Length: 144
Image 1 (tube, rainbow, N blue to C red):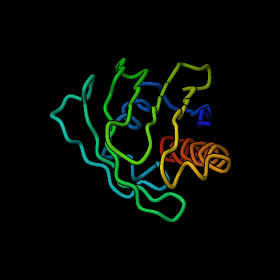
Image 2 (image 1 turned 30 degrees about the vertical axis):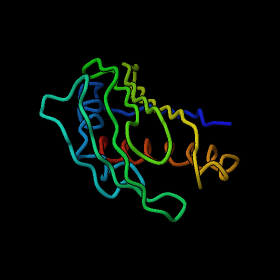
Image 3 (image 1 turned 45 degrees about the vertical axis):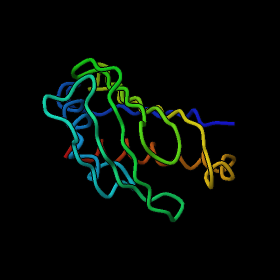
């Protein structure tokens, strides 16, 4: 089993502004639920090869992991893959122009290992709710 969930939401703000905010790792704790800390491990500018260390809380446990940017189109697409952490995952942020602003999309793909493998059945719905909430928080921040 594995996880492959996505969420999307239209945000009444320009794609450029939404993408710049969401693709800035130091903003992660502000709009991504469960992320308590995010640190850029590589030099700027953000792009292919950029690495970000995150600390998160999920299912009552603290999780430390590192994501590496493996695909990047400025102000449009960022694909990050875990290179260190409890389960392999890929996170995609995509931002497209929409008549009312920006269509923001998040997709999380992954497989569980160890303790988390036992939780596969409940993880997909929880991850989906989590990323839907993330987009709502991003919308609130960007539209205020």
